[in-house]
Length: 259
Image (cartoon, rainbow, N blue to C red; front, side, top):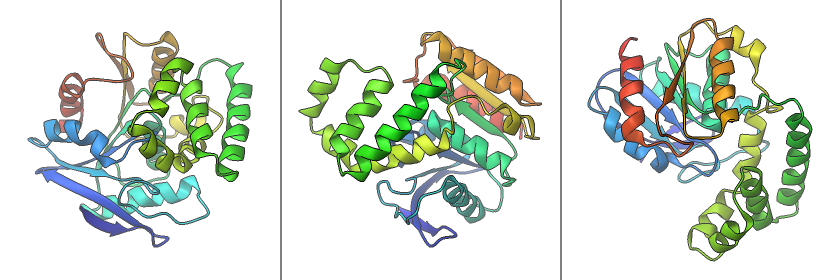
C-alpha cells in the first residue's frame, strides 16, 4: 500500500486502482480499506478508485487526541494526493464522515453515501448519549471486548450470535479496531440527521438505501437526501445494510460519471 501523511503527521495507508476521475471510498465501523475492495474493483474500469485505512486501522497510524476534524484532514490529504479534487463515497458511518468533509469545504464535486446510520426518532437521542458514555468508559478501562459487544448489541445483533462471534478468529480483529468505535461514534454526532449542515452543501449528493432493511434506515436516508439542496434518494431492491457491491456499483457509476 502507498502512504500519504495527514496534516497532523499521521500516515495513512491507501491503494489506488483503475484510471479516470478520482473517487475515494470511505468505510464504516470495523472497516479497513479492504472492505471496499470489491466495490473498488467494479468501479475501477471507469474511475481512479482510492481505498484507504482510516486512522487507527490497518496500515494507517493514529495520533491522539482524536477529533472528527482530523479525519476530515485525512480526506483532504488524500484528495490532494490524487490531484486536488475527488468525488467521495461513504458506507454507513463513513457516509456521515464524507458529508462532514463536503461541508468543510473540501474540493468534492459529488458525494454518495449508503445508509448513514442517522436516526429520525427523537427518543433515541438519549439512547445515543448513553451509548457514547458507556462506550468511552469501557475503552478507557481497556475493556475492548466489552466495547465490541456493546456496539454489536446496539446495532441489533442477537446475544447468542455475539457469543458465537467471540469464539471466532474474527473477534481478535474486532478487538484491535475497538478504539475506532469511539471515532465513528463522534462522527455521528448526536445521531440525528444533521439538517442544518446538509442544507449548506452545494454539490449533488446521492443517498442510497436498501429496501429490504429496517424502515428507519430508509426514512433516515430520505430525510438526509431531502435536507440537501441538490440531494437525491435511491432505494435498491432486495438490499439490506450489507449491500451487494454488484447492485450498488452501477448506481454510483452513473452518478459519479455525471461529474
